[in-house]
Length: 198
Image (cartoon, rainbow, N blue to C red; front, side, top):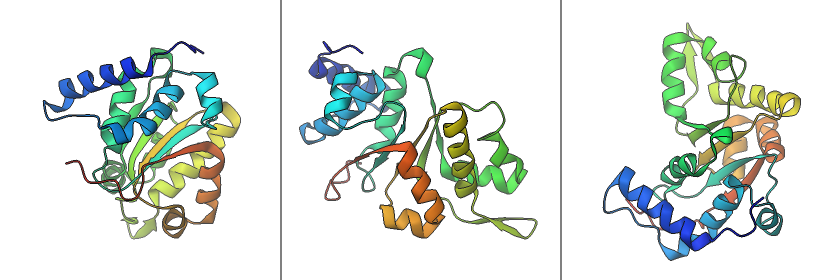
């Protein structure tokens, strides 16, 4: 709602917070500013800028880009920028897959039906189809389909980071998941030539 946001000041704050969290080597490079402006506009609910950027504030964010471009770090920083009413947690998809191996199908309910909250599923595509007592399950596909229902019925948002393209998402999770992600997420993408910053 605040149209008087000074985006350069917010980026300076994010950089300071990044140094606190990740050490002195953390730096926001100028070529990433356009991506970060979009994230700031979304997470600080700058309606006018979101309109300019074609970002729907009702939907979540899919932040995509090559390995090492800073997707996870940025989403962790946005968590600190976001007003408390819109806080979210960042959960690696690989951790969810390990939880599934231990606890089985209850994990799908944990991230969709039981006390649902806004979550950023980090690094979608790094987990594998897993077996629980011999039954193979595409855990993240099931969670994302369930969360789509929650988006429709309760406006619950989901965020995602991934280095998969749209066609790779369809290959890994199926056409239904790709279609539902399209209708529930704003895509913000790093250029595929973005260098690894690690």
